[in-house]
Image 1 (cartoon, rainbow, N blue to C red):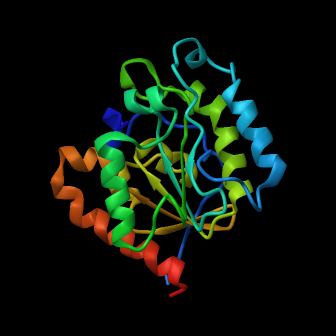
Image 2: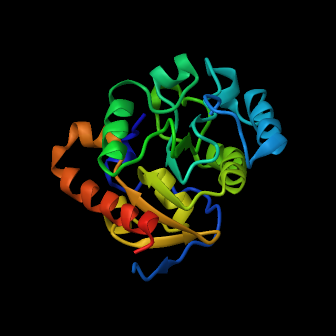
Length: 219
C-alpha cells in the first residue's frame, strides 16, 4: 500500500521510534535462526493483537515476509488490500516492483531481505496510518528489527521514513542521507507504489539503492 503521504509529501506526524541522526555517508516463509523463539513469540503475539481499532476490520495480520536472518530489513507503511488478503507484505504490482529493485542490487526476499510494515493491519480504504495506530503498533517493528539484527534498513514511504529517522520532514528532503537507527545504517526512499504513479522518482530511487549497496559492501 502507498498512502497519499507516501508520494513524498508530509502527512500526519508519526511518533518517533528512536533517536536517529544523520551520519556521514562514507517471514513466516523462513524459519528464524538467530531470532529463535523470541521471534516466534513476537509473531504469535502480533497475529493475535487487538491493541487498536484496526483489529476489528482487518482480514489478516501482515507480520512479515522474507528471511529473519536477512542482511537488510525493508520497512513499508501499512498493508493494502492484497496484503490483507494474503497475509504477506508487498504483494501485487508494488511488490513485484520492489522485488525487481532489490534484484537490481543483488538482493532478494528469499535469501537476504526481511520485509515488514509500520502497521501490521490494513487501514480501511487504504487511508493513511493514524498517529495512535503507529504508536500502538510500532513496538512490534522495533522488536522485529532488534531480533533480525540486520546490516542495514531501507525505509520506503513517508510514514516509515519519518518514524525511523524521528524527523518530520517530507520524504524528498529526508532521502539522500545515511541515518543511524539503534546503530544500524538507515536509508530512506520512495515507496514502490509511488513509483508506479510517478516514474520521475525512478532515478532518485536508484541513487538510494546505490547508497544502500555501498553500505552493504562496506564502502
